Image 1 (cartoon, chains in turn purple, red):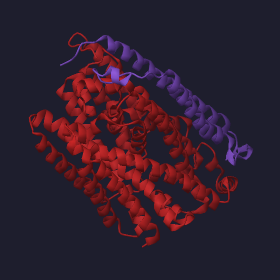
Image 2 (cartoon, rainbow over the protein chains, first blue to last red; image 1 turned 60 degrees about the vertical axis):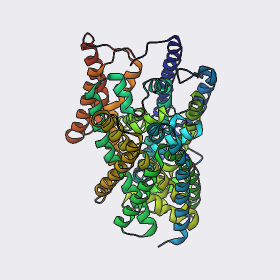
Image 3 (cartoon, chains in turn orange, yellow; image 1 turned 90 degrees about the vertical axis):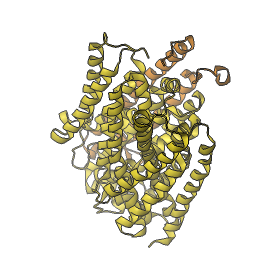
Length: 96
Length: 478
């Protein structure tokens, strides 16, 4: 049943492992940004809030800007660090 | 009955149906019925992959329940909902290429297939299948209730007749179409959601007299509505952050999401889907929940949270546009139901029936059985949904949490940790599910966090300890 490791597996798995860790890293960045702005700026008395585009500043930075930042980060990471590999065992020529 | 809104609504739904049934013709020409019907021949491109992920996840919880709670809690709930943005990239990055490669090697069609080949254990397969069937029933019931509610508020029909119409259309659709039909229509539905939420948000802001005006109204009513802490100040940072596990990273363990992570054609599709998925999920989550909050000054005093969206759309939009926009949540619910139904029936047929009851069944036999089982399952959910509770989001989240607690480590560690074995997987599933159910029953919100956190942490240790303790007995490399 189980196939042995082949050199192509090691090469593909190394890439897959690296990309999985990038995913974990992005989540950490995302979380820190989201948490920092929301509870850093949002814990004041609502009477002292500042507003950007009508929204409370904590919300604007945490949720609106946070989303834009993540979209940019994800795009950059995928474009520059993610590598195309064949998914099937036999058709590496076609996919690469 | 509101015909002006109803006609575009029906039009969109029928259009989606036709596309689905048209695209399913390919299933019948596919060489392998199982792989075609349940996995679309592993041929999804980037756009469809991103949209089907989004649509499956952007279920009634975000489209009806979510905005409904946001209406009650204010901006704090939008903050919480934004934890879902991670699903857009995290699922495909972490399950990633490894999952796609390994599942092709194993010729796995379902998540249980993957577990079966990875751990080679009957107990793992049976525990996994049982938890999928049980928990997804809750999730499906929640979705059906949402769908029926929507039809109810749009047409003025009774809840039971609305439920009946909903059930019938879903059943016909899934039974005929299979995975590819579901995925293709997800793409259309995802697009409708994207555009629909945008239109509704803009109309809501205009109806409320601009964002500043709406925020001022909210502040005047209750200043807590514009803080991160919720209307009563009950949303603590620990509680809100724990949703990062429940609706964020934990989502990789949901079978309906995981199965999509093995369905794409090549890595280029996957890369596109990661970028596109992040954008689409982020926009829909932000817009949809903001709409819920902004609705408050415009239509005050709504009691049943699930009806906020339909009532708001009918209030701020011309009727025919409202019909189109409301097709968006309808689309979300339908695509979720479709894929859940498909998943439960694939579990029954592929993972239980073909594995243990009749392994040598003919292609035709399997085909007939798949459609029959799907129909029977639908009928059972219908009965469950007849007597619904008010807030569907909680029902839905219970099912999500249970599946996440069960599967997160057997999948992730199974992929990336060579020493993980079947004892680890079994221990992890039992500890995860057991603790989750017990926690919901006896000590909800331990340490101020959602009840998902503790089971996920404990099942990790269960997996590692049980695997390490049994290294001598058994050791399979990945």
